[in-house]
Image (cartoon, rainbow, N blue to C red; front, top):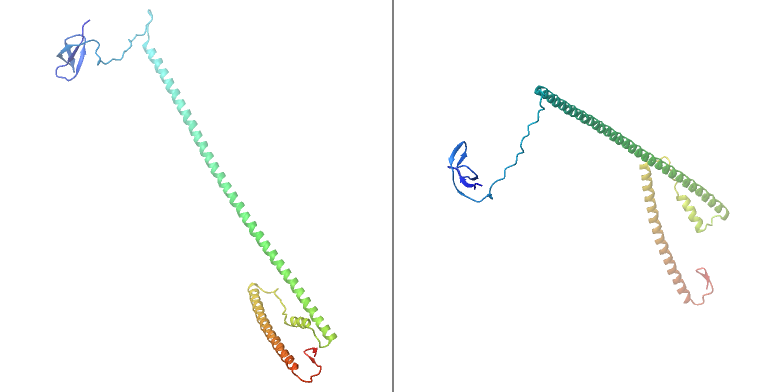
Length: 266
């Protein structure tokens, strides 16, 4: 077996190994080889792909081969496959277009359903607010009617009480004459000072003015009461002082007989 050589083509920088021959072909030119022998196999040698040998088709003996027919059949087969691919493509495209149309229809239908639901919710909310407002107005009317009835009842009771008190005082005066107790005098004064309260025809502003008037009147009565209580207290104090002076004077009175002083016998 001939040993390979490590060679370098003349005028190149590439080293290669060859098994035989004394010339090296490079870019269409032949150059003499220069090299040294080396061991086999070379560790840097590249493995080339193995190409299987081409086996020509066997032609039956004694028969004539029609290459035009083979070419025509192959063309027909290719055309049939191409037509099948085209049909599959258009069928897939048609299916995708139908799915796209169905998707658009679903989107439009869903959008219409959402709009209908929103309209229904808005209508329900409007009805609920209207019911709440109606219920509130009805309650306010009932409360106003109830307050008016209560005021009418109170007015009627006060009127009856005033009439009864007046009749009672008249009868007491006729029976007892001019003599009156403290309670009777108090009732008579109250009946005289009591003012009739007629608020059925008054509006809101008039009711406020009436309430302010009653408040001022109550304040005036309280002031008069305070003044009268102070005056009564002062009078009681003066009476007690005078009574003590009388008692002190009677103790030092000579030959004083029994007499009624201050409601008691001394």
